[in-house]
Image (cartoon, rainbow, N blue to C red; front, top):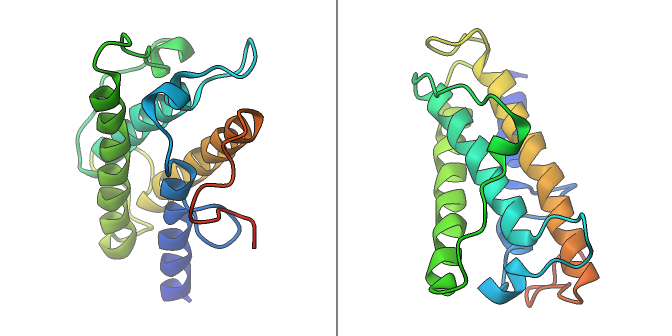
Amino acid sequence: MADAIREAMVVALSGKNAHVVHMVALEAVSATQARKRPKRGVATIWEQLAHMVFWQDIMVMRMQGEVPPPVPHDADGWPKMPPVKGQEQAWAAPVEKFAAGLKEAEKYAKKANLTAKMPKVKRTYADQILSLATHNSYHTGQIITVRRMLGLWPPPSGGDTW
């Protein structure tokens, strides 16, 4: 049973099964497209991804035994988009960081004692992994909605159009 739960956590992190794979949601999105706001009050793809990276970094730090600095306000978890100049390179950075963070979290999902408390934190590895998986899944859904609003869905690989 424990192996099945562990495997379900690994799959949840990836975004497979009931959800679109996170990296597919970002497939073929240019920096210009990522910056485009489809409607006032709707976060851009770039803002969604920056938010995901922000919290994923914190959750992975916790799994690694570090104590990240407190986040005093919700707005602090929504990093601003950088200036337009050099945006293609700037867009590649959070995409790569997000993919690397997913791989790091997956290592813990595969190897950690899921019921053990993380070092210096009063949460279990299972709790942190599930929190990360659901947070990423939620925002990946928002990215897909923005892509649909912008006429950018499905991506070349097909997305969820089976």
